[in-house]
Structures are given as C-alpha cells and as structure tokens.
Image 1 (cartoon, rainbow, N blue to C red):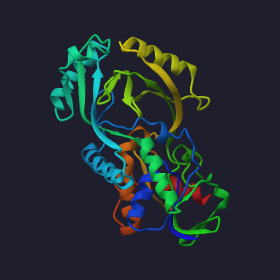
Image 2 (cartoon, one colour):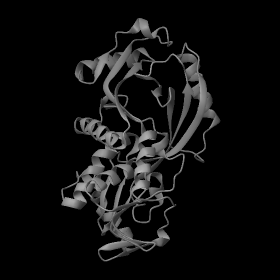
Image 3 (spheres, rainbow, N blue to C red):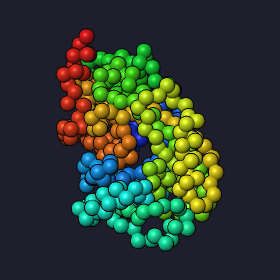
Image 4 (cartoon, rainbow, N blue to C red):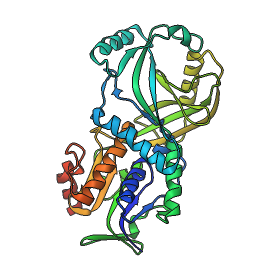
Length: 355
C-alpha cells in the first residue's frame, strides 16, 4: 500500500494534521496505539486568551483564537458533533494583591479582562473573600468526543493502523520513506511525549511535565463557566467537571499520586459550598518545551521527515493553526512562521544526524 503521508500519533496534532491533509484529498495513514492516558485525552480543553501571573495575552492569540473557533466548528460539523463552545473563566482572587493586579490589568486589557458583578449569586456556591475577575471570551473544546469521532472516520476510510509505532520498521530513502512495506512521500511525527525519544528529533528542547487532574461530580454547579481559584474547575463531559491541574517538573512515574488527590480534594472542600464526589483521577506526561513555542516543519537534514509537536499547555489553540500551516507548507510550499519552524534548530539537528 502506498500513501502520500504517514502520521504517527492521533492526539491533538495528529488529528488536525490528518484532517487538513485528508481535506486536501491526500492519501494518509495514521499510526496510533489507542492509549487511554495521553496528554490530549486528559487535557481540560480550555483555550484561554491570557496567561501567567502577569495576565498577559498568550502568543499570537489574535490569530489563534478566531482560527481555533472556526476550525473546531468545521471539524465538528464534519464528525456531526458539537465540540466547541464559547465560555468564560471566573477568576476568584485568593489574595488582595492578586485582586488589585487583576483590576489594574483589566483597565489595560479591556478586550479580555472584566470585573464580574454577580457577587451575590456566586456566594451561594463558593467560599471566597475577594472579588471575581472574568476572562472572556474563552473557548472550551470537547477533546474526548473529537478524538473518538475522528478516529472512527479514520477507521471507516481504512486510514488508521492501530499499532505501536516501531522505528525498526522505518527506512528512509531518497525522496520517500517506507514503513513495514508501506511507502510514503513523507512521515510526520505527532506523537506527543513519545517525541522525547524520537531518534530524529530528540535533540529539541523538550521538557518533561506531568499533569494531574480529578474528575468530579458536583450537581448544582453551572456548566456555562470555568472556575479558577488556584486550581481550575472545568466542565468536562456528562455533567462532570475536570479539576486541576498540577504541573510537576520532577516525578518518578506517570501514575496519579495520593498527594495531588489530597491537595485537590482539600481545595474543593474549602472552595465549594455544594457537595461533590470524586469520579476519577487522571495523569499524563505533557509534551512541553523550554522555548514555549511549537515544533513545526520538516527536518533540515531530511525533508521526508516532519514534526508537529511540543504544544505544551496551549495545544488546543496551537494545534489546528500549525497543522494547517504544515499541511499548506508540504502541499503548496507556503512558509511556516519562523518562530515555530523546526528549522530554527537546524544546526543541532544536522549535527546530531550526521553523527
């Protein structure tokens, strides 16, 4: 069997790249072992236009936010499911200092930052001593539905090989690659945290980061907002909520920890006035990178090998945009943004491959 492109991984990046290449009528094959605890499957799905303690706009959000909203609506129509909704983050300030900082920034960034005036209403649901900031508009993606339904489409078209990818089966040639007797013009690695061990791209400045979250049931909590007070409480699925997340830079394994569960449970007991119950506890290795910019493009020493990875905590906004850039680049030669193009690491990638 010959195809135009092989894609390794069907997380956020692999889903979007396969979608845009398929839309361009290219023959694709996605190789993905269906693991239950990948970063995409346990992520909250929030697209927040601001970030950090300084509450500044996220990188390129003016382009990313409208593109993401349109892209998720388009894909949702294709798989016949609503996977994107507009929402807001209610930021319950834990200290007076953070309240004052938010109020100051709201005068400087009125497009996204607002002061919530529904104080009396939320007093019935939450314990909080200060005011509430509001970040809007935000987007919320139903990642579980998107990944599941897109996988079904791949299966229907015989475009999915549900198997663990093996580099021993991959050979590169002049102008093409082959994998276990399957020939392709190019192969793209969208394998998330597995990219740390990719022999073509392991030199990139990846950063291991473990994320954990609880899935809780809390009847009576409105699902039209995201609630933040140190931890975030995010509408999940079937009237459940995602509560997290921790960002652990040092960890021994990827198992859910007792420490996180106790810390998160204690937070919920302090913050909520309404009852809740813990339904699940999830954890995953997040494919972050030290530059906080994605890895997009073709290997500088072999243009038959490509990558779309390193999205970090902003994957829901970055993945569709840069999947489209990568698809356009390989089909039409249009450029990838230089600050995302993997060619910015040309020296180190070329040097290691030569060895």
